[in-house]
Length: 174
Image (tube, rainbow, N blue to C red; front, side):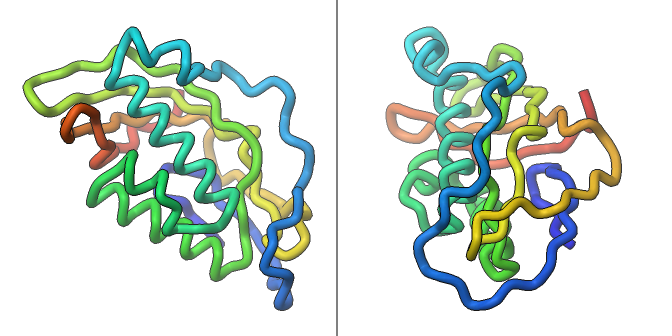
């Protein structure tokens, strides 16, 4: 069983053999992810929100590649969140899993106090699906509760000219 640190669904997976080192393409991605916020559309308007969405882009990329050392993670997150995400990606890799697809977002405006900001988001992972790392074939998902939509509060810290995600708190479903 796999429980992702971002309040993701539990996955029932079978073991796999030693597969090729290059990732297969995996199943087709969903064509209509729910409530996806565009990173490009918010960058000029809200740098905290843009940084938060870049964090998610890095999380999706690291999970897709099954690579916890992906540079994008280091430029979007700091500990303890960076360590949590890397541990999750590493655990998935050991279990020969990858996550493919899209994550939708419905974030509320950022609240900034000094060098700390928070964003509350209802993110939708119903189109972000586990696949076998060696074949790209989908893995059956067992949803223990929820709808694939989760609310969480993310804390960001100012770092130089930008913001890094440093923590999150699960707030339940949305």
